[in-house]
Length: 346
Image (cartoon, rainbow, N blue to C red; front, side, top):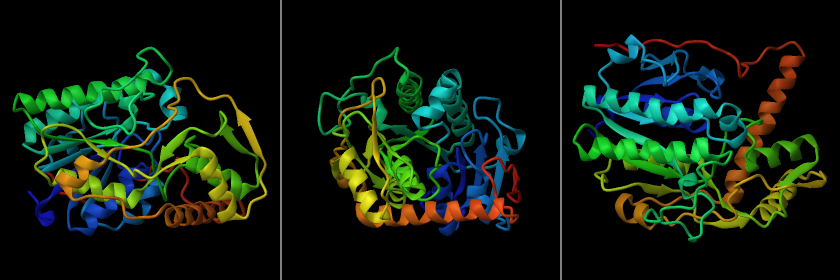
């Protein structure tokens, strides 16, 4: 199964930030890829450069609905299940859909894996640890999660998705891997996703006030997207079936430190504005990646400064493209719904 030339992969949520970067990496290795995405938060423009690629299909569909026949007929060997809004403003906008995506959508993906004999990788999240009382967070920590708060649709939804995945694994119905992803950043993030890196960079580039929630002392650990994609591929191709694996960068810094770095990088004179900390927002977040290091030989390589420079450059170009569109040179928009076809089915 490690032969990429024979890999036929389904990537749910593949038009999103991480998914589209993963698809590029899979295609570069010679795999054939089908992307299933509802385009509710993903953007077809993230995949527009693949319009002439014969080993790629984009299928617009919602993973909570019965899977399209074009997907059901394809001989998948691998399923990367990434589908779900991942930023608080997006997943809280329709909490019922978020929960159904994590439960019904994961059930659909697992049943497809069972039917095809495909290996499935579920992308879970560090949010399963909630506002952690253990630091750093290891995979054995069971978390401190509010099951009734505004983030529960995502946090508890992902916990339920993990339960389904490991139940399928234990009963021999599917070959499953589970990644717990910590804060990730890089090109193709949405400017409006509400995450701290995209918020701060976009506000700095625009000269707007920079929003800091709380006093800025809360910490995060930021992993560049290329490192995360490498970790996902390694986990998929591994024999790690005995539990989830943390994937993230253990270099911890405060939100205030991040803001200072972005201001220095962009030369912005934006002012800082403090707003109340959102309900159930984690105070500290840092992965223990010992398991990934030992079992996958994986550690992040991209330094924060290098990653922030690349991300800021991408957002700056995205802003220029948007202005060109306003000036009469249309650019791909987040609402573009171009379907790309070319993958043979059974």
